[in-house]
Image (cartoon, rainbow, N blue to C red; front, top):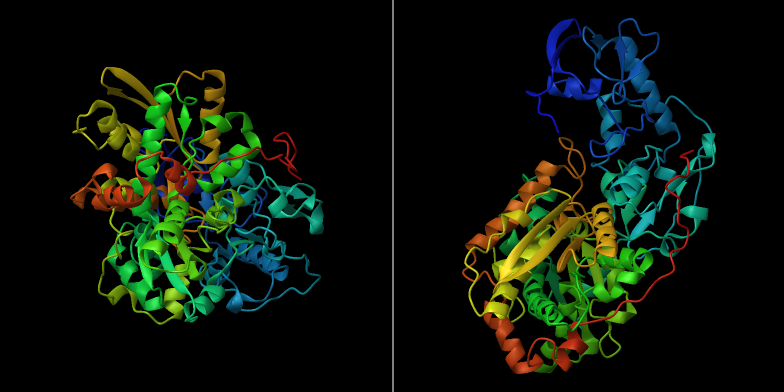
Length: 596
């Protein structure tokens, strides 16, 4: 992308004052450069231009009608007005018409206080509703274990449609019908649970209102936490500690690891474990599985299996590649399996009285928790998943002063982790962690340069290679299901191109998960600067760890000695591995289908 310095500068007048701005961009982008933030709803910098809401209109001298600044190019000599009474009144009328067809339940809405439509109405001075007319009425879609769809709160901005089609390339959503009856829905209005939705939650991330929200479990969890007859055990994912502070108005990039451990105890959990421990365990199994495949005991390239959204996507759209996918459960499910087997036995607990909760960045983990393939001894490893947003609300609801709480350590033995376990939360982290261990297991030597910069960053697809005992290992990393689609097409056409592939379903990896805190008023959803700060928080934790390789984690070594025996043992396969099967994709929307 061109920088401002590289753009050809042109002269424009904004509100009767001259400015130099970069050419070859839209009016909105140019005015952003010089400090004029035009109101917007349907616009998102990572998505195609829709021009649907018309909230971003400006006056351009010589133009008969108002111009949608998100779509109209900036031109030499333009005279633009952003603040005239007429244009402000027109914008206000547009927003008032949107509000006329919107539910009047702000104070009990999931997005109250963090709704883009609400902020826009306030900034425009809308203090009462001027229009009264027929309102749309649709039933909520509650079928999915991960995502709730409420068409009544949809403002037809199209962000969810474009995110699903352009970034994730799943195309689970499209416009249907026309005029007043236009609605966003899955194909044939089938329930979300039966559609091709992968439960990634990126529609939630970009929705400006509460048309999409996660399936909430907070009140049910509060009930469980007061039940004295069950043992309440929680685990927390790496990326949650890197983002939870944002829900308490802290700047992105502050790691709140010890604070989360202390807070979860105050909420009422009996044991607080760290998903990073089972991330280390995942590496032991996955690295060993990869080395077995290198020796001809399985299909290459091996593809990682930690991302729940990617796994559902793979079963629907890439069933021919199931044999390429690692059989390892995700760290979340490995942890739950260990808690209900080894930990329960070691502490003389009835596993049926254990209630396991996972605090995750990801809405798709709610779907994963219900997968029957993951059961051990007919028990689900994870009984409940709550997102970063949900745990933040619960902390506030419980009256815990999160910003002043004294940090504590996780419980042992399932709370000790290496730096490799930390970086699972960012794209490229699983691959980097796996190679730190695979290299030593394969060569018998310690990999000295363990920070693999080729695998870091937010480029959609990253490629690299590592030489292990003279053998060149070719690797690829993709984040976001759209980028995964490109990599997997390469795997289909050139099966020998890679040895090892990492895929994360969400942009940026888990740090950009569909359950992460909403963007604030100063940033766009999935803002890359924010994602970079979250990533650096995890890399920073990795650098502070004394142990930075999974196989050096003493508690991981102990659990193999006391319980599992060795990686890929029969017991490891029973407890830590799973299988996948093809799912018939229903309700696929053709990418050629015309919107509206």
